[in-house]
Amino acid sequence: PDLVLQLFVERALAAVSLSTSPLDTQERLATEFAQSSTTLLAGLDALTLPPGSKSSLAREPQGALRVDYGGSAVELPGLAVPARSWALLRVELDSPLDTSLLLEFLTGRFASYSRLARGVQRPLAGGEGRVVYVKLRVPGLSGRIRLHPGLAAGSYRLRSLEVRAVPQ
Image 1 (cartoon, helix red, strand yellow):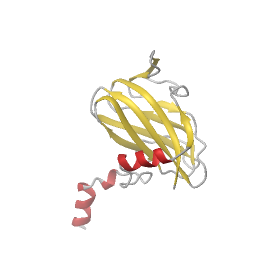
Image 2: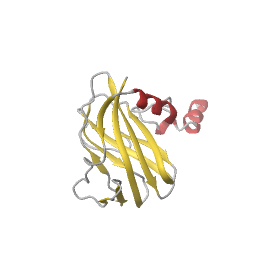
Image 3: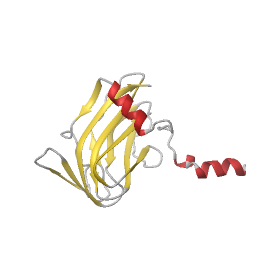
Image 4: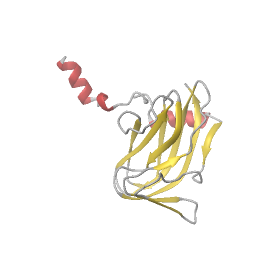
């Protein structure tokens, strides 16, 4: 038992959501994304703030979306993911510091957001033009997806966002 616990701690397995896989490296997801031709969402126009949000959105002349993040998320519209497919998101953004990008989702069974139970985090290095891929291995994905561009207060710039369907 001590060895099992040590492995869980060293590899951070206790914090790995069932909706993700350790095999989902950024390089592998970039390849899967490039091979998919089924686009579920492209662009930043459909992003909105949830009611009561502590954040603000501002469209910039180059088409980017500045998010002054204060703890609330930006919401993507609901996605119609084809059968036997997963949603794979590609987000390009500028981050003021090293942090994590977080996606929260709903399913037909669970109709409330939960960072721990229904959320996927990916590390995000500070700087400009950072690209993060996130595959949502979520059966029955429904409702709006919440995107937290970073988990620290600050000004983030979303440059592009695209969601494609990839085979399970």
